[in-house]
Each structure stands twice: as structure tokens, then as C-alpha cells.
Length: 263
Image (cartoon, rainbow, N blue to C red; front, side, top):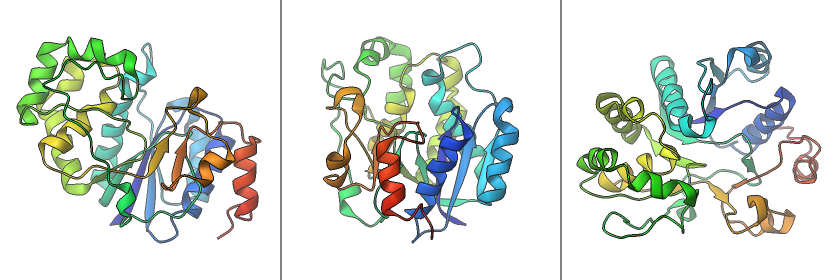
């Protein structure tokens, strides 16, 4: 059983993702980890090559962004990743990731800094301006049928925050997967913008589960992109966004600081 399975969706150049994997494995030295990758068939051969370099990398080739917006189906992709890994090898923790998340210190799941407290927005007129993707909330909150379905499972709670770096324990993932499968919420409402930003988080609140994150997204910075000092000041081990350019100064800096991620 893996300590942690990191779930990614991949659509960039393979050399970029290989650099991301080196970074990930280097900063998870204290855990037995695996990676599940959701991608498209055209990247399969290149990813197979990576799975030979990193034996605990698994590939899910289900096409998830054909003829639609990628951002609207991220949660579905992560759930398909969980189903795949659930059928092959179980994990203690399942972490939702983006391929432009980057680590700068060792992961420690016992660190209390990872705990995140969210506010219940179900009884307010807030439109999510203080949360990620504020453009999505008016459309989401106006979908009364979907909101009613979600609240029936969350004891009436509704909340929202980023999905990047969200740490979900096995028991919760099983309940989340069962709810999404049995309610058919992602198929009944196939164009939910930002579903990954509010469905898991609301269910965590409804199930009285602790929300934990290992990634800091710099929502207050232009294009959410941190500089070196921002990263050094960050208490969480992972940051977003880091450029998907393998020659980006932040990537180069971390590679040099860690001897090119040699273990």
C-alpha cells in the first residue's frame, strides 16, 4: 500500500513533466509514493518511457478534454485516476496535483501547517470572491438543482478552495468516489466550472473531515507566480505556479540546490 498517491493531469511536453517528477520524488524521501497520470493517447508512448524511469508511475489514457474545456473536467479526471489506482494498488493518502506545482522542501504529513480551515458559505450571499476562480461562483450558485444535491450529502454545508495539493485520506476518497458515482453529479451537470474547487471541500466539511493542503497557490501575485523569496518564505512544501519551461529560473534554482534531484 502506498503512503501517498499523487494524481496529475498531463498535457505538456514530456521533458517538463519528467523534471516535475524528479522534483516530486526528491521531496518525498520519507514516504512510499506513486503517481497516477491522466492524459491522452498521443502522449502515451512518451509517458510509458517515464514509467520505466519511475516504476511507480501509472498511466491512465482516458481522453478527458476532447471537444470541451479541460478546466471543467479536472475533478472527473482525478476521480478516474482514483478508480484506476483503487483497482490496482491502494493508498493511504490521495493528493490532487497540477503539473505546474513544484516542491521546495520535504513533505511531512504530520505538519500542522497543512491543516486548512474553510468557511461555510451556504447561508450567505457571497459569490466566492475570496476563493479561487471567482468567475465560477455565480454560475455554480445559480445551479440550484446541483447545489441541493450536494447539500443533501454535506448536511447543508457548502465551501470552496483550491484543489492543488489537497490531501485526501483513503476513507474519505472512498466516500467521495461513492457519492460522485451514485449521484452521477459530474454526468448530470457535465459543465460545472471549478467542480474540483468545491465538491471535495464541501464533502470534507459535511463529513467532518480535516482539510489538509501541502501546496500554496499565490492567489495574490500576478499570474499566481512566486519569486524565489516568496518560495523561501512559504511554510508549505509545494508552490504554484511554476513555469512549465524546463529552463525557468525557479526550476533551475531548485535543481541546483538539490544537486539535480539526485537521491
